[in-house]
Image (cartoon, rainbow, N blue to C red):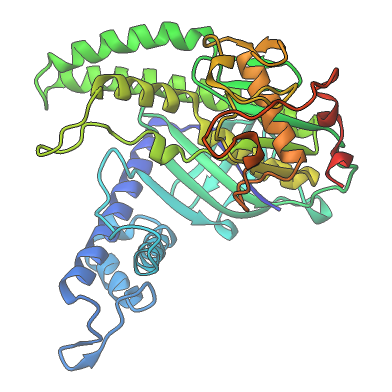
Amino acid sequence: MIRAHVYTLRPTPEQKTLLAQTVGVVRLVYNLALEQRRTWSGKRYVGGNSRLFGAKGSSQELKALRAAYDWIGAVSQTAQNQALIDLDRAFANFFEGRASYPTPRRKGINDAFRQVGREVSVRRLNAKWSEVKIPKIGWIRYRDTRPLRRGEGDVVDIRNATIRRSAAGGWQISISHRWDVTEGDTPVGAVGVDRGVAVPFAMSNGTKVSLPSTMAARDKTLRRAQRKMSRKRRGSRRYAKARFRVARLKARNAMARKHLAHVTSRRLVRDYGLIAIEELRTRNMVASARGTLEEPGRNVAQKRGLNRAILNVGWHQFEMMLGYKLEETGGILVKVPAAYSSQECAACGHVDKENRKNQAVFVCIACGAVDNADINAAKVICDRALTGQTAENQRWNTSLLDVEGNASAPREASTQPTEACDTVDALV
């Protein structure tokens, strides 16, 4: 499998200057190639000669550019070629309908470059520190928080390395490498996960995971920092200093959120072979409600607060982590329809909006079952996965509602409603 590990670099002042110069030159090469393709609009003939505007066709021009300007030639040519390859991929995604038209890279946002694996070397210094060799820059130390996994012959097969400058001003490296997965027994358990705002992750086994309390305290500090930044004059040194402080606070929240998603997903993958989640289209859920001048939206401020809360939890990030980690253990990720999962009783299957008394309490008006609202929803999600109601076939159990849209008679209550979620064998 191919996986990437991210580490925080500890470059010297001279190396910081070289890294900044590299990202600047790579960004310039990308923007020049983009402007060239915009100007000629894909024409093959320029000056009576056949001309290709892809990465291969621009290699000779890049060679001449490096010879004409010493500060461009001082930067790794491989990193510049990788920028041209990125542009080719961006245009391919545009023509195939997967992305919009490529836009120029901007300073402070696209501060990154990539090196191929054959030019990158890694060596371990001690139990906590290692260093990586980047062409034209040299060996850079980094904190070895997670050793790279080795493949055949106990060798680290590095595919590529991406170096980027974070919004908080630090440098990070993402090392993509290939490693062999050892075969083992796949866990036999099944669990449902309900994603929410008040409770980010609730499992059908009764476990609830919340965001760290430090994030809430940091949010207050962040709001004060943003107010102070808004009172500074744009372009001034004080504005740059205030902006850096805001970026650093946001980066800390992002790291805490990502760490929680990693830990939670790893625990689930280790203990369960089937993980069920709701099919949520996060991008549509966090769309703005402000509307247009002709048709302005309603409750814009409330919707903006909900969007911020959803993004703060990181639903999509958690889903992506579950997907690739289950590949390692041989487990499966099942997405089920999200309709009425918060109103359905996990014990008897009765669906009614009156079942959910408030944000935390679920009391079924048919069978009287009482449970935490998020835990009950997670049990419903797990039950839907085990009974085949997946989001792929979009099959919804319409027997729960009659022709008039009212809740039908509840099925017989089960004394052990979570028993079906204890084994994957129930799928057979």
